[in-house]
Image 1 (cartoon, rainbow, N blue to C red):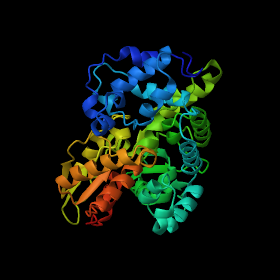
Image 2: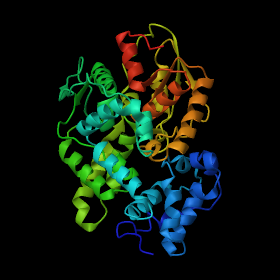
Image 3: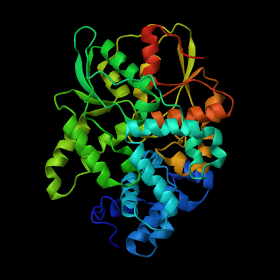
Image 4: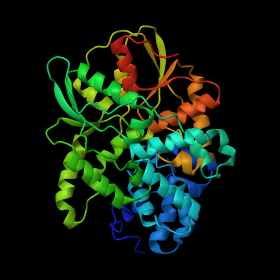
Length: 422
């Protein structure tokens, strides 16, 4: 069966299907299988479904609900002993099924609204303010809108534009460009501010390209590959090439940047592909960059603190970044680093998943909150804005508002002698 001219390549469909030996190692790490307990809602089951669609034995509309229910956390890719690229299969299938009429009209409209809002900070800020105003009347809102209102944090009205260039403190050790992020600019701009301070203090000049746009993570996650390519091309044009690295401080964004080289595959796109591959090679998470650079030893914390670290899926599984943030945190005197049980299991955020699948995301968020509370930390550190919003909401729902900070915010507070929140 021809799914789509862009995904007929066996690397994306036939390759993963043939590589899967159905061993079941993926089952224990799959969040939806844990919650739903159904084979068709596991990576192994979804591969069987896609194989059936590819061969013409399974109607696409029968497979769509199960593939839509996948968080795309990629824990299965980490767990797979056969190296199955489930991530490629998932993106290819979602691209092929993006216009399927089997999805209810209301859900298709909501998805379109998210695609037209989240990648645009001005629109997102305006929508967030409107949503905050509407929260007291959430019972009157349509059922499809309520999950957004429940999770919606207040936008930060104090944040202004980032400086185009931040000079290093002392001799320059490196020069980088920073991706400022769409959602992060609106809801957690303090992460970007902390990133600039920590990089500058470590002798790094930081450029923030004014013409940059969305990284394309949301479009990729939903299979909108044409939109993702357009967003990638815009960033390829906006970011300078004479930098040592392109820094991301959001796991989902960083993962998208590192996929740019795979977006352009036709003969007509050869020039784009070469430029995108070079860009992707320079893209790196803030924790990896600082770990490689070697940071100025931070002073001890003003007050000793127990800090648990949460592995964001698109950092641990998509980018395979696990140790660098832990090594950075371990260099802070007075900080006791704690591990969260079942750390490989997704918190339920997954881009827009907690909006589109609130019941499953809610169960995962509650489980993650329980795991965090079990180690009794003073602070939770992590590396992704989506995880931050999701986990913070579920901790507050449990009546345990443990402060949630980005890893670079913890470093920044140590450098500035500011106590961690309690």
